[in-house]
Structures are given as structure tokens and as C-alpha cells.
Length: 160
Image (tube, rainbow, N blue to C red; front, side):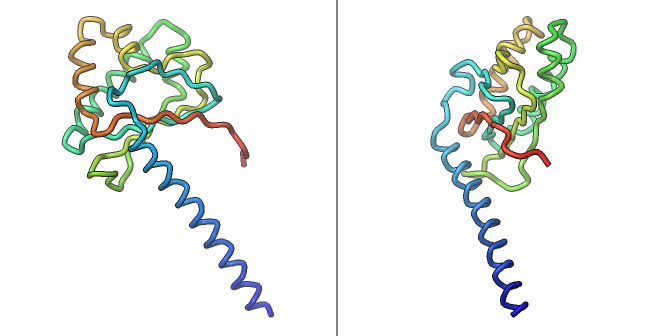
């Protein structure tokens, strides 16, 4: 009897795990299909308390993308604007270990908390911080993409 209960519990755990993985895969696939051709085609303001931006980068351009991200971080931290400093505090950049669609590298910006009303558009932030270099930085940033970006607003469901 105990063995039967344990098998059912394990089966339930496998089903839950599979469901989570399937939801993630669907999100990545949708993200590759429904992206902007231009990485910054519209403003980037999060409407929820937290958010993610999925960035699909050409594997050959990883160092270019990471270099622009470092400049972005430097600009946010050095800003005299309190909102920009708050953005720097909550903005983290992750790189997926697994290859993405078409061999692209997936970079995920995890933003928690998202600064209410703040624009997360890279071009705008770089323009504020490095006006003399913004054109070259933006061209490097934009040309690094394999498939653009997908923005996701997140609402907290559980905190434990």
C-alpha cells in the first residue's frame, strides 16, 4: 500500500516538473517567434512589480553584447538620477548555459523590483550616460541580436 502511494506521489512530482519545463519551452518558442526585429522598437517600461527581458544574441556576438551590458551597468550606477540608480539595483543579467533556437545565446534580464514608470530602453540609458558614444554602442548592441527581444511582466504569486 505504501509503495503504491509513493509511486503515485512520484508520478505527480514528475507531472508537475514536466508541466513547468513544458511551459518554459513554450515561452522560449513564442519568444523567438514574437519578437521585435529592432531590439528597441518601442519603449521598455514594465507594468508589473518585476519583469524579464529575453534577449536572443548571435553566439559570435556574445562579447559585444556583454560589453554593452557592462557600459549600461556603469552608466546606471554613475547616474545622478535616483530612478536610474534604483534600476541598477534591481537589474540582473543572466546567460543561459544551453544553446537557444538556431544556436543563439539566450540572455535574460531579470528585473526585480521594476522601477515604476522607468524606461528600460538601452538606447535611452546609453544616450544619457554616454552621449558621445551612444551611436557606436547602440549599433554594437543592436547588431548582436539573432532574434530580438521579448518582454515579460511578472506578478508575484508566492514568496517562500
